Length: 272
Ligand code: KIV
Image (cartoon, rainbow, N blue to C red; front, side, top):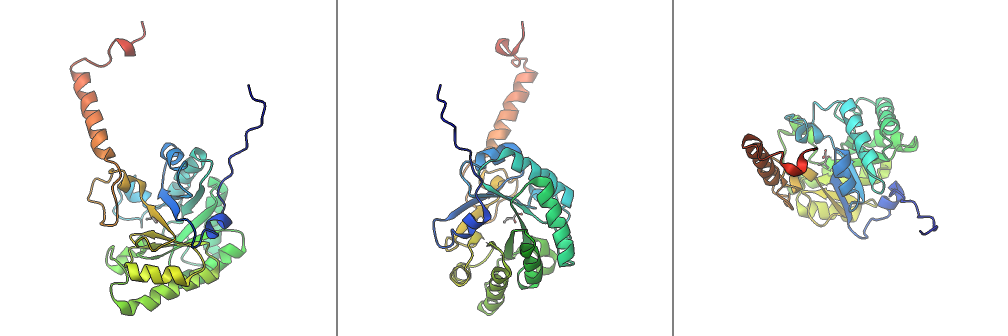
């Protein structure tokens, strides 16, 4: 038996993600529970415990109703299940917008309880002061601009951003403000390609695209969407890499049939 000490797996850090600007594309997926996170951990640079879990795991209509405790519970599971990827936890609606102080209290609570490495919050220029307040006090922040699902009521639904060129300066300003305020990366969601490409060249931090084209410095998808586990039709920007929904259906159907016909449990599943 070898007595060589095995080198411990080190988690990817916030500066390592920031330094990937313009380099090899950053790989990311969402995950909400320990076992899927352990699989994602082998391949992803960072894992987002997104507040999309409200819709994906808990059948909510939108992310607006997601409570802080739920994010913490899923965040803990993902940190427990992983060793390598940076874990980022979403700050849910209503836990950071009111003031930088409130944002700090809740972000610190998330980090202490879950052991995650960073938080993500939605909003551009309007969140600049808060992002600066958090980063100056030791909380790494990933920003999220473009289509921001927590504001879907104001936006009138989930709409692709930047279709009118006149709107581009606002999005560009959002990206510049969050970068200047200290965000280490920025998610660009649901944005036309030329705008995402312009922002990516303008800001010194990595852009992580979801529905924002390959022009970004990295990509993120909701794991259940790319695994074919979304019961509704996923958005155009999702590529479905597996059909787990159909596989689960088939497995459960076979089980039910075998229980009813008494084919399960059979000899090999029985203690004699
Ligand atoms: O909540 C989430 O899953 C997200 C991603 C879509 C970026 O914010």
